[in-house]
Length: 154
Ligand SMILES: [Zn+2]
Image 1 (cartoon, helix red, strand yellow):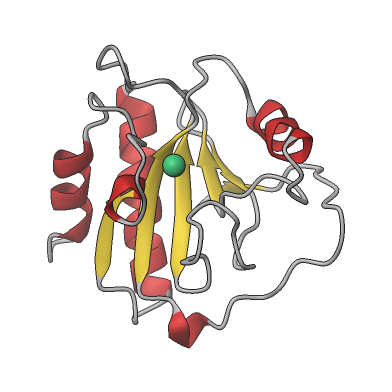
Image 2 (image 1 turned 180 degrees about the vertical axis):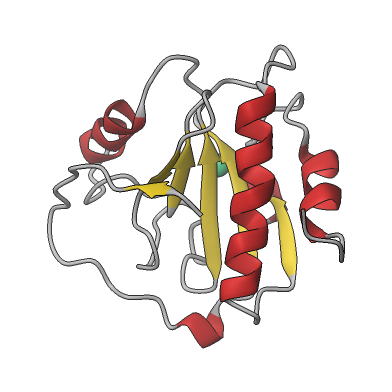
């Protein structure tokens, strides 16, 4: 899995996840069509977070970028200790706009994380855990979950 490590300076120390506690992956959209990982990091910092709250961020071109990595995220309130957050650049509220490369990277990253952390048994949208419409209604949620959790790994 090719993961890009950006130059992000978090405010304060990140807390390593206890991987044996991690049982789920939450999928998000960034709600910004253009913003890259640095813009999203600034968005979080402006709101008082120590930095980007997602564990991983996938750009529209399919590039997989580490956010908090395997440290505790800050994207699914009350659940960040057992839920990994993967966010997709884009706004999927009004139209289906996920490029094929971004979709494929999402499936690959989910499969990679599930192989790496065998306690993960569930993948769902952020809205499963919280009152939010994230990811947007046109995010290919069901399709991505089905493609990434089938027994046959691509
Ligand atoms: Zn979200």
